[in-house]
Length: 301
Image (cartoon, rainbow, N blue to C red; front, side):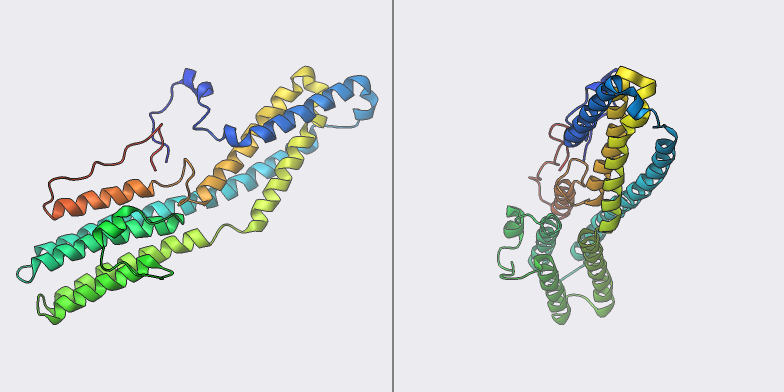
């Protein structure tokens, strides 16, 4: 996720790395080159382009803008829902750890071990959502219960955590009402995991993306035919600006569609996992706490 102060007006045109322009530069260059060719051809054969008008492009541009806005809203909804789910997860994890550690009596070392398993679970979940190898924190906080050959390691870890609480209940460390409260927390954590997996595995319909890409390319490549008689030598410049707007919004929608990816605009899963780790270790009374992750080159991972 990009984390940086709002740029001043004079900085807007100097920001390159944090914008999508690096991804869409080939499309912009293509449109500008086609515009230059059309403008040169118009100057040599003006009568061949006499029948082209800007009116059809105006209508098509409005339709494309509406459709592009619809898709970007759908992609942003996915991004925001993922952020809400992970925000709720932080609250559920903190509440479960607080409940576990404030119970009186029983084996406190067992409860500390269980809370550390929760830290391992949330790190495993973040890696699972990003399809990345599990970080060392998973093995560090759950060295003896890390499931082998499991297709869904976070779910297997959550089952182990639930089994640990069931064993505490069997040993009369707490009563049935407390266990029901704990089970509600564990169920909420499981539902959040399922919701995040649903977002990750259910992209926006491919037909929307295909239709949008085709229409955007057709509009931007044909637009110089409507601009050539009015703008003259400025046709490539204005065509490139239109291409930047349409292809830029399209590229930004692609990033928002995958909130758990590794794009600059993806959610900072590693930073969220570190936040939960710090909260739980502090609840355990640890003094040497890891530092919160900071943005690197204005990008928080």
